[in-house]
Length: 231
Image 1 (cartoon, helix red, strand yellow):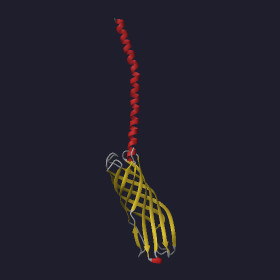
Image 2 (tube, rainbow, N blue to C red):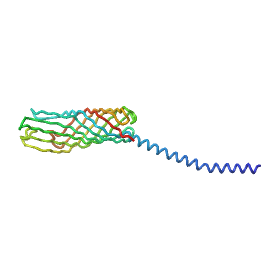
Image 3 (tube, helix red, strand yellow):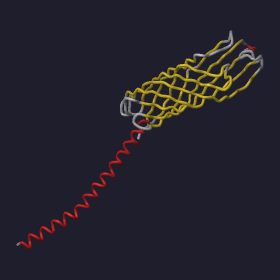
Image 4 (cartoon, one colour):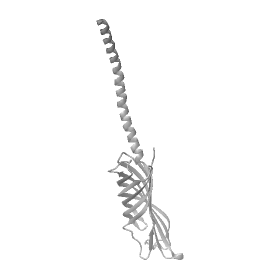
């Protein structure tokens, strides 16, 4: 009887020793799965932060100058962007904008016109300080830097519209520096689509005159449609 009891005890001990590595292996697998799950969650958040959009509004350039007697008109500012999520609260945005001003003087055969295009090409960091991408209403702040292209299309016979007294017809392209900062809010009315509104301050600085001046700066009001990439 004693021999039988000792034999059963030995079998139980052997079974326990054999089961221990299996339990350790299962625990190791669980620990390996947890980082993998965290990585998947992080990747999902980045995808939810990524998207694209189109904005339209007004750029109220505060330092516009022009010759006396000449008329001036501007078109709405346009901006298209692509956004990549960095984490739950940060995204990086690449944008291309367009703003146009037309100056004209005279009429008929003596009419003179100068068309000015400012094209900011900016990289912007967007911070959503209070919300995550799963929330519909999200305020944000942003700051960006990049290039600005200035295009001047002249149709001047006497050269008097922009001064200098030299006739000029053609298209001039000048590169410069672009800066932008602002704050706004986004609201998603579906999983993918939403709208945005923002107040910005933007500055385009050139090394020489574009449309009669070497820099353009002022506040802007923009609104538009947003799209979040799906996964």
